[in-house]
Amino acid sequence: MEQPLGFVAQGEFGLVCRLRRSLYDLKQSPRAWFSRFSSIVQEFGMFRSTTDHSVFYHYNSSGQCIYLVVYVDDIVITDSD
Picture (cartoon, rainbow, N blue to C red):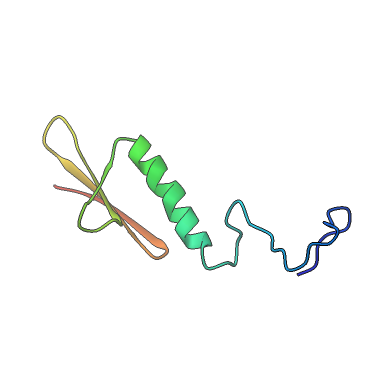
């Protein structure tokens, strides 16, 4: 990789660029997507399972449980009824 014009550090060779966020088509982009998705789902009051991090659940006041399961590119939502 070459240093972009205007950002050349004189006398410095072998420098690399550090990405500050994930880009599409990189191996880390699904991880970044799930991290963002997980934080938003938890803001809605759901809890992440301690044994399987792709399962979220929420108990309401009447004792019903709502489950949200994420698997690759599918999301399944179900309840205890």
